[in-house]
Length: 218
Ligand SMILES: [Zn+2]
Image (tube, rainbow, N blue to C red):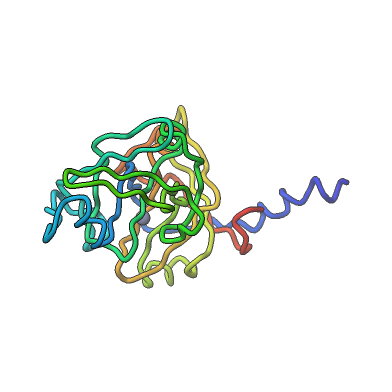
């Protein structure tokens, strides 16, 4: 039993403090990614998203368009659509949002929507009942290949980060590292995570650690 109790402590010694360039935090509010087919169904034939402001990840933008996202117990109004359009529609919500509309909060990597809850999207030209696609996004750390090489990180590694102000500072574990040259170094949290730690977009990670073991769940 003593060995069992020490397992966690043993693993903690595997954590390495990352001497990284400062890592900015980006807080993602609830939003919708649309397929081309669903964009037309919701906004009308020939419709194109109107970019409102660029997001920190290159090529991504917040659109002027918003939708209603409805579940069995309620609806969220004015949910921002992000562009450009994707192959598959996906709704990213905070756990609090899921509770509010009455769907399970299912934590998934972006794009991994199989078997996730459905919601109804309501736009000015129609509505779409998604059979799946409403997820709580896994917290993640975007970086370029050069960042990853500097940090000794591989795509899919897990990190832990300390974020937040002195009163509510928190360590978030199981941060999945996403490496691509189409990214910029940034930690992405949802609004529940950011609120719990008292941090906001533009704040910096206080201290990042790399976890050497492969599994997110131990
Ligand atoms: Zn992200």
